[in-house]
Structure formats: C-alpha cells, structure tokens
Image (cartoon, rainbow, N blue to C red; front, side):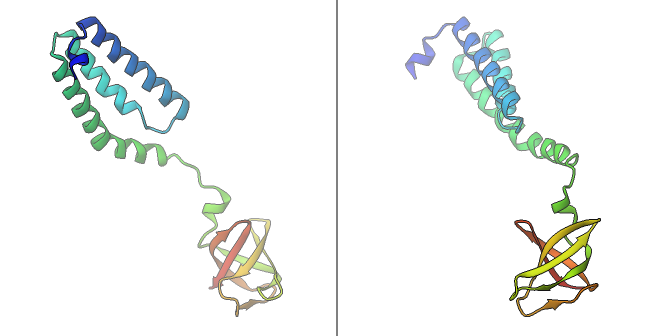
Length: 152
C-alpha cells in the first residue's frame, strides 16, 4: 500500500486515465455492458484526483461509484438493450400451433410439421404419442433442429 501512497498527483491522474481508456476499449470490443461501469468509477476518481484528493479517497470514490453504477444502472441498461432484441424463428415458434405433414412417431424417428411455410423435423413430447397427418399440435420446445410437440 505504501507504493500507492508515494505516487505523485500526476501519476494518479495517469493511472485513472489509463483505467478509463482500457475499460472503454474493452467495452467497445465486447459490447456486453461489463466494463463501462468501471470507466465511470475511474472518471469520478480522476475528478477527485484533479481536485487534489488524497489517494485513499480516490480509491474509495472509484469503488463506491463503480458499485453504484453497477447496482443501479446496469439492470436498467440491460433491460433497455434487450427490449430491442428481435426474436428468431426458434424463439417465436414456442407455444404456436403447427400442422403435421408427416406422421410424428418417436419410435420410428419420423415426423415433419409445417410452421410459417417452413418444414421442420418434429418429435412428440411423450414417446407414446403419435400425431397423424393434418393434425394440429403445439410446439413445446426446440431441441437442436427438431420441434417438440404436445397436444393442443
């Protein structure tokens, strides 16, 4: 800890600037809302440094501001960014009705359904269930490239 206390004001300033730049670059590369909060804490510590604050105060401000940003703004930002996420075929078909175009029989490892004009391989949720051609079923989940069906 003595090493940190012996650094002069300009050294601390460069340390906080380096932290800001490094974490900002990491954030740009990953785009995962992981290190931007550390940049905010480093910016607050840099401001304390430029005002002549003690290194211990700078470190405390860095950790407190980083924690506050992580705790209060990350959930909001994550929710906002995920609301723009577009559902894929995989996600939008769960719970939807499909029409059987080839008998679905798990024992025979056969079955195809039609969903949105696209043909999908299908299997029954229960190995005992068999779905006849033109029967309507509901997609309960996706496993790999197969739709898993349940009764309507």
